[in-house]
Length: 356
Length: 256
Image 1 (tube, rainbow over the protein chains, first blue to last red):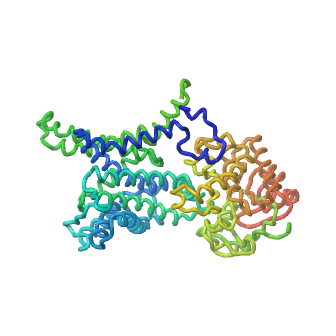
Image 2 (image 1 turned 90 degrees about the vertical axis):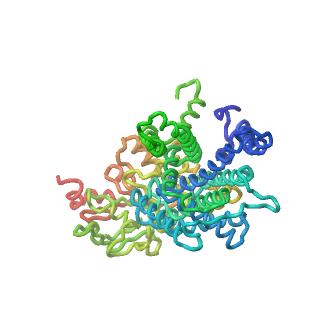
Image 3 (image 1 turned 60 degrees about the vertical axis):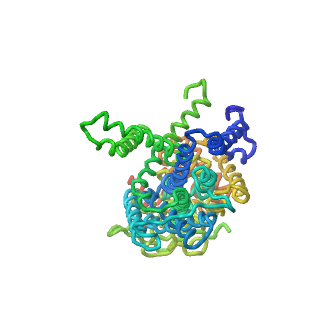
């Protein structure tokens, strides 16, 4: 039961299953257990890197949620959006306002800020009804700047000062540090990943891909283009809103400098590196770019000592330069992203000892 | 029921600037009938199909489907009424598998939205399985079982043509519109396709409009033919008679 080649499906239900063998079920449970035990065990035993690793995992998980949403609208529905960072900001600010001004509990504000961001995303997605491709990309950049302008000038969003939040609590237990927030962020991320996978293998997901692959045929097959484009933006922005809300409750501040246009570009970059139109691709892309980013952060201080004649300029520019280079390499060498590489590895493993 | 008109166009006029693509076309399709629309390149065949589907809206004239006017409806609304179509240049969802392409065509018959789909539990799962059974019957009928889980973009041309017919059938149409189903095929593939089309007609009793250039095929499968030339209907009747009509011979089959 190591390899799926020996398993045969007898029902359609089996054929649709994601996890197909007992071995894989075991692996999944072990991995999830390790993931959830790590922060508690690590901090209990006093491992020195635990705090750093957990905060890294939290950032990863929040980024995965945001990029998962982007995958739905861009990777699956084919509507390119550079506005994901702005939508995250909307989620962060709305959850801050809902918890501090409206006095709602975090547990209500989390889904509610997702829905509010989704509704805001309908405005953001409206241009997709008339324009596509490059022009839509530019329109979403405009939405980013409009959003940032609003956050900067409305008094309810604290203008240039931003907002501060209280940490979420459950009864008397307060989620006031990275290790505790981990137990909110991780389940939300896993749940939303599962939901995204399911949406993509049912009716709505197939309609999204139909709109992406052939909008002409999609209409002839009874798919309402406008409805599904807007629905894709709604779901995508729901994910961004939840990600933003978690981010706000992790950092306990909301400021528009946390959500710059470059973040929106990074998210698209992660999708390209990971693979457009693939749920595992989101994980690959976010992990790759985040690790890459950490490495660049470690290396860049040394640049000034290795190349003193260049001053501090290379250190400051290294992140963006390297990011641009990675994107260019992926677009030329592997435009289908790491997810496609992963499929090749899986296929050759299954076919071993025959050549793929 | 055989004589009832399922689709009828009256005085259809469509022009692009100064070019009249359709110039007062009247035609009808009867229940259980295979109607061939033939004519030389630029005769307005595809424009006619696009008017029926709702991609173009004719400047004048009406289209009635099962007695209801459809000429003002958008394409997806026309599809919901039960008009399904294939294209001359295959227009499949290239990133999806054969199975997913056919399941996507069940769209109008399925109900569950993103919420239930996201849970993949209860109603959504039952719905998936129910429609999977219907789609599997079509896969079985078209003999494309080995291709079921293959991505459509990787399949050879003849198979893709067949998958496109399958997708049109998966919609459970009450009128099937086929735009050059034999284009670019070799003799064997044409024979297969003709057999599938006749099977669909006999078993499912679905009326069809077929645009086709291969006159042998048209003679074999069409009950009736309509000939268009420069947007005008020049002949309408039994295919065997049509091909002997001097005007048709002159316009289309070439002068002798």
